Amino acid sequence: NNPLYNAGAFRFELTFSPHHPLAPPRATIRTSIYHPGVDPQGQVCQPLTSPEHWEPTTRAVQVLQDLLWLLENPDPQRVLRQDLARELQDHPQDFMRRAEEHTRRYAEPRHDPPTL
Image (cartoon, rainbow, N blue to C red):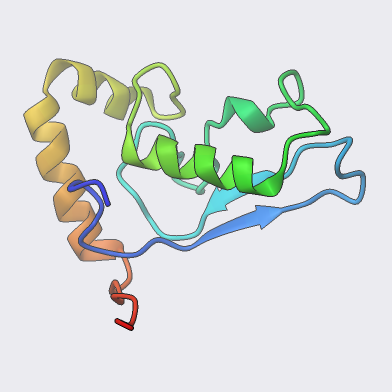
């Protein structure tokens, strides 16, 4: 719902290891996104799912909530793309414009939920 990314929809994949819940799942964004916390291959900087921070009691819904929070709140401290983190920090208006343009160009059409 963040104005930078709400013009489109993004596909992601959550992959669980055969050793889950002892090993963390891996989140991958399958839709191109202009975001400092997501690399060009779609890998996500998500400390919650890093081996050193993973807790076997963490639920999948917590992983998804953390992922959504990261995507809606680009953080120059959670970085996989230094160039975009620098742009966000030094030129936030340019970053926002480029993120919106990238979303309009590469994201999938967003479907509104049906009204009841």
